[in-house]
Image (cartoon, rainbow, N blue to C red; front, side):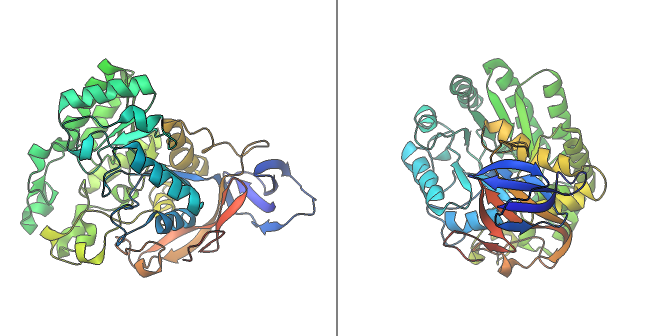
Amino acid sequence: MIIRGSRPYGEGEPVDVLVRNGVIAEIGDVTADDEVLDADGLVLLPGLVDLHTHLREPGGEDAETIETGSAAAALGGFTAVFAMPNTDPVADTAVIAEYVYRRGREIGLVDVHPVGAVTVGQRGDQLAELGMMANSAAAVRMFSDDGRCVHDPLVMRRALEYAAALDVVIAQHAEDPRLTAGAQAHEGVVASKLGLAGWPAAAEETIVARDCALARDAGGALHVCHVSSVRTVAVLRDAKAAGIRVSAEVTPHHLMLTDELLADYDPVFKVNPPLRTAADTEALRTALAEGLIDCVATDHAPHAPQHKDCEWDGARPGMLGLQTALSVLVSTMVEPGLLDWRGVARVLSERPADIVGLADQGRPIAVGELATLALIDPTAQWTVRGDELASIAGNTPYEGMRLPARVVATMLRGRVTAQDGKVQGGRVTA
């Protein structure tokens, strides 16, 4: 296939990219007689990598499956996703991790990498089979109890010690549960006006500070999930300056949305950690642009209608994110001039792949590299409709919103997996 007239990283004049046998064979003015994908000056990036996806299978198939989640990912420009372990049963053994891995391979739209639980049943008191999962066919590279914090400092220290020995990453859901019991919204003016129990930013900040100290002593790699507070940014700045092995992600919704949206008690805006203030959002954007926050991760969290279309207190936290992530990043970071397209590649592809040691993702667009790519129309505008997205669930906070930029095609090792809003070569239609 020839990708005719694309602009790698949105730079320079359009060039042709010849793909053969899954590899970029030539870049320039290509005259070979191959199938043509007309790019017409569109932006070409490495395929996107999401370190934080909830695919719900096994056990939550009323909200999402590995198949429908893979379709949403491919349509969003992603070529690799990391599936969180809070399924039923929990992915705390090699058996469950291998099921998720093999199911992803059967579907073949994206590389599905299972995230293993840190503790048995995500209960926080006993380490799971980290070594067996890391050495299994699934080759688990990241472990997390996401949705719950590994609260016991001794358990967390042991996990980080194992991480150092196994060369894997421990991803922490930073939330001190003693500070968030009954919490429903960011602790501040909005929560007070609405009569909702406050969720202090200190619940996140204190766990991150503790875990950075533990990672320093254990020598393990710590990854902080969904950073949401300006105070956490300050902790990360100090930790990185001290040479601690810590990386961090921010979600698209924490870059764009604030707690002001809670005024009507619409549960679609309920998320963990909660939406915070405009000051937090501004600080997160700046930290991402600086590289202090390493990457963007969607925290794609589909829920069945009965768990979202209900009163605020009873609703489950979480939002869809795979098909809107790129557009939200363009709106919050590219259009204001905080990132260029090469910066987008850094935070949505290259750095995520580097954090978990993926050798075949986030690679440069260069001759001899795998053709794992995303083709993007930077001038497109589209309106988000939850019932038109590929996920089974429709809980998008961007419903009816007009967003910039759209993925035109996604390619995984030379094979087109999504094009013009439809998945290709899989059994899912969207």
